[in-house]
Image (cartoon, rainbow, N blue to C red; front, side, top):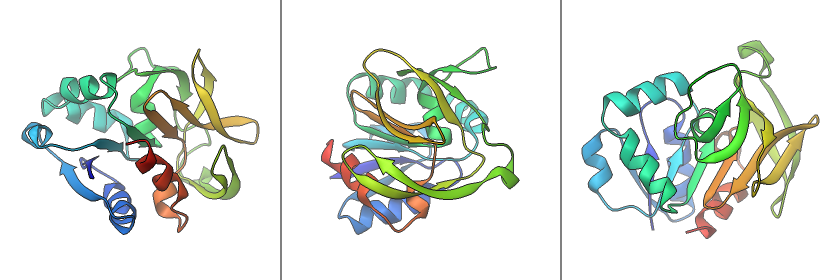
Length: 186
């Protein structure tokens, strides 16, 4: 199976390493022409959501990726990737793909100094290590959204139809069970 990994900035290489370790082939999505190559699922990595959203539009990738998600392509989104999927972004009038009925709060744990590491349960997977870096959290969810993980009474993981979104960075820890669960969605 082949996974398209959005490779505009930040932690995409770490996702690729985990997915390849699990036997998947990865293709880096850097330009609109990459979207014409066949792939079975999509990873939206962490980074800076504002920059990613801007580049997706400037590079002519936004509409195609949004259509792929809306047409049931499985998606794993982490940190900024989760922000890209949110229907509402707290304190921000515009949204990006808006494919998960949830409200997300950017930089909810503060700046870089507010980054932290913990362990908590993820539904159906078990307790996993969680690395939060300038992380958002999910302030509320709409109908059909399954809450997968909560840390300090804040939602940090959800599943909606073909999409899994997490506030933390599973690609930065040695536990690969979240990526395994993603690959099972394909």
